[in-house]
Picture 1 (cartoon, rainbow, N blue to C red):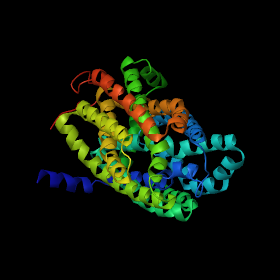
Picture 2: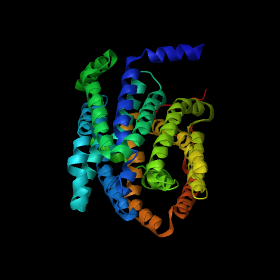
Picture 3: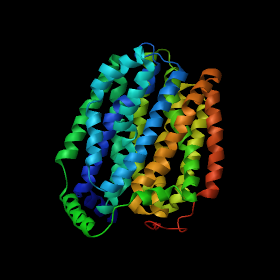
Length: 428
């Protein structure tokens, strides 16, 4: 009865509803083209037909620019706190993503490859790759200020991605340009949502924030943000992220789509199946986003994070040994467990052991930036390794590295009741 009452209260919370819709539309605008981005780059028939090394170079450049923007975005958002200025800027870029891909990015990659890489890395990073962390960080700030569960709001982001991933597979086979124009459509809806829907509680909080800031210094200073980089415990987490989430991201975004679609008789069949599987997997991920906070309350933040690393290692390693589409499809479904089990406790770990005033900077630097640094360094070498030894052996190498990082994390991750400098975590 209590759970039903809590659910009713949550569904009546305008801030929860607005944050949920914002995340749904952002991930829909991103997912409808991003889920097939690697296939578009490598496909001879429906894309550009680039090599593994060329794709690795593109991902490395994207990660490098994303890395820089994440520092900027994190610092700006902690200054803005719950203001939407930065989100509106990112949504504007999302609205323009269709014409950018069709009229500028694709032609440049064909005729002036390096220029295309530079221009693309700036636009894709500003509108999506760096923006994703900011949308999540702002929603997490809202969840603490306006009393709702962040994981339940984030679940709608995954749900939006799942819906468009199913659609994306069909559109890609017809014409990849439709995927990019779809991104603009959802980007426009996102922009309208951010501009025109502002819950009453948020308006009041912004007014109070203005009054408070006029008499006190509540916003973090640049000195506060730079001080984070002097914390040894943050660097331990950065190393951990680089050798877990980074390797997983390269595996899942840069390699898995092409690996999976080649398991089928024709590219078209593989692309259809990948789109369907991706949609089912992300839909299950959305459900798990609502379930994992309950798991976390039972076993704790640290243990949930360790569980997520275990699932990550198993999924990557299993793909290195399985050889048929059915087995690979079942293994792919572990993604729906792994992402919530890793990202939600990672966010909570920062707000538990560090100052919550700097939560956006911490999340961007400690998690998102660390992952991007790893991608800058590793995308091209891993793409080259894949060209030389194939997907399966590369997956085994990545899985082994994640296993070692998991052992390292067992010793460096703090227990939930140790060094609590943020919001305390109380198990149910």
